[in-house]
Length: 124
View 1 (cartoon, rainbow, N blue to C red):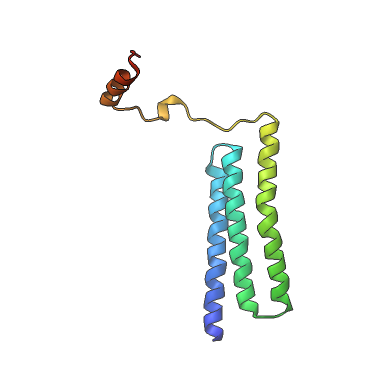
View 2: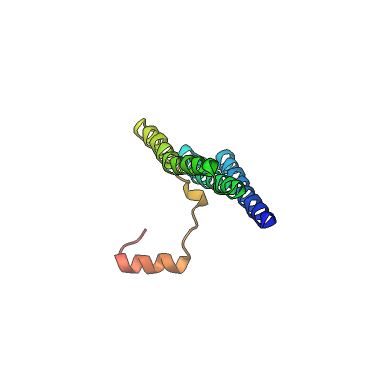
């Protein structure tokens, strides 16, 4: 039984590490503040949750696991609220989300343009 709990706790901790690394990559690679806070907020919550779950499984049912569960619950609620607050303050300060330019947007097929002209009755 001890081997099963060791393997299960190790898998949970490894999943948490992968989630935290994914969030860190999103923080570096994504283009603007809003997408970065989304990636970090989601992956931080998932990563810490998995790590705490792995530690609880490793520790067993003790007072330490109860304290870890309380810390996990606290982080589960406060991390998304904090990232939302940062994004809201940035938006109110005048920072707008990044909009891709027209060059990266796929163009409609020529038949679709002709059908759109017929529906609207005009030329563009």
